[in-house]
Length: 350
Image 1: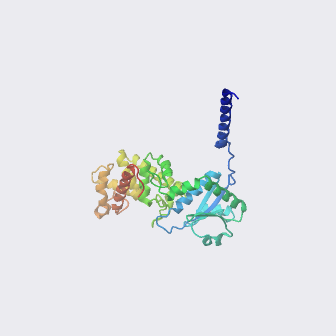
Image 2: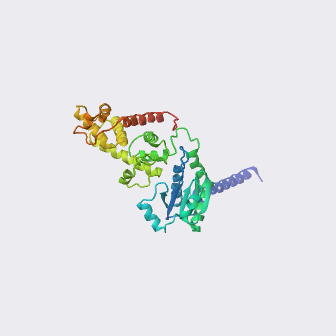
Image 3: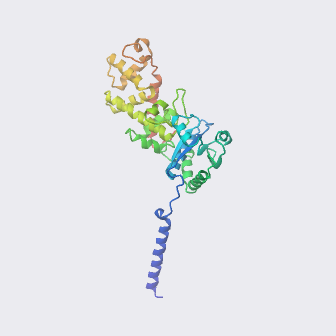
């Protein structure tokens, strides 16, 4: 074989092999995984015990449930075992024959098996996440088993686990950075400022609740969540959604009342988020009664300590009585200090 012909043949073979390799790797030509839950609504009992103060098991398992929804094209209606049933949960359970399709826990299954009949253990993904089919329906068991095998093999599960429990990347603040960035856009605020609020409210511990009934990352009360049509406040996505909606409501309210300076507007909004818009309205009314500009934050800082003194809180302009404002003043400064920390290069939550 002469040399030019040999070179041509080698070039043709190389091109053919390259095309075959590209076809083999092309995602568009690979078969799509079968979505066995597509269009279904699955009722899930989330039974997460927080034995450790730093535990983020709840947020991690909610993120896994979100992944299941997106991968399978289904709806996962989560009933949080710690919160009890609300009207919506009850209706979903009634339509499902009183059974849960999925049970997610970080404790032994024996603790919840009694009230739900037979359980089919699907996978002990980790100490933080144990999944079971809540019914004896083999379709649910097999579909869940297939999905879990898929996310374990394609690296999705490992990536999510590292996001919550690994060391994290430089510049990462919390496992919820992606969610915070998304919802911060409605405010037009730097996502790191919203992260500073979440740190100040819950230190990024999703299972946090207060004596006043506030829940989750942004410490939202059920009544506040309900005002925005949000009821599952244990979900990190729903909680941050509700929190940023409420911040935007407060910011718009204060803008309408005449506060225009952007720096002051942020401080007023933070104060209202902590103390309630009514308390800030009282402080501004007192400032005005004392001859101070109620639209300037520095004047409100001077007035707020007076709100605990009877000669001031008993004035006609103060509608809600005594107010111990030290906590709110400290809160505003704490959030802004944490924000400045987060703005530094390569910062991480601490």
